Length: 276
Image 1 (tube, rainbow, N blue to C red):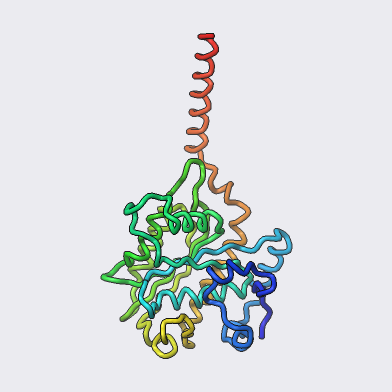
Image 2: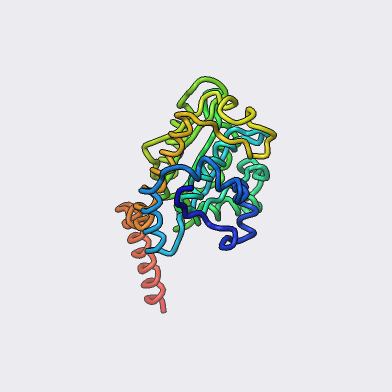
C-alpha cells in the first residue's frame, strides 16, 4: 500500500463522515483497493507539506448529476472522491435528491442553505454530469443554478478550482464537459486543463454498476488512469491557488465600485451634519 494522507475514522467528525462521505470503504477493503496501490508520491508530498504549513486540509465539494438508483455519474464521483481522500482532502459529496427546482421555493429551504454553505466553505469543486440530449442533465444544472454569483460581498465560488467530468451511455463525447467549463467560467472559477469523459459507462464499472449502493468500482483502463491524472492536477492547482483567493478577486471594477459607495456614504453624512 502506498503512502496516504486520508482522514482516519478516529480523527474525522462522525456526523460529517456519515453524511458527506458515502464513498468510503471499510478499512480492510481500503488496504487492498486499487487506489491504495497508486504511485502518487509527488502529489502526496506536496499535500503533506501544505498540510503541515497551513494545518488545514483542502476542502473539496463534489457534485453528480443523476437521481437514478444506479447512477454512473455518482459512481464516477465516488471514485474521484476516493482518490482525493487518499491525497488528504476533506471531501464532501452533495446529495441532490432533496434539492427543489430553482425558484420553486425561496433560498431558506434547508437543502439550498446546505448547498450554499458547502460551496462557501470549499476550496474547490468536482463536477460530474451525465450527457443527456447532448448537454448537462437538469439535475446537475439545478444544483449550480442555486449557487449565487454573489451574496452581498460574499462570492461562494469565485477563485475556487474546478475539475470537470462527464459520463456517457454511448460513445465518448465532450459536450457536457464543454458546458461545465462554460459554467465554471461564469461562476468565476479556475477550471484545470485536464478533464475526464467516460464512454459506455455501463461497461466501465463492475457488474454494470452493481446494485446502486455506490460500491461498484471503475475497471482498469486508460479512462481510469485519466481520472487519476485529473485529481492529481486538481490537488496541485488547489494547493497553489488557495493562498491567493483574495488576490485573484481583487479587481479594478470592484475597487472602483467600493470607492464610489464610500464617497456616496460620505456625502450623505456630510449632508446630515450640515442640516444639524
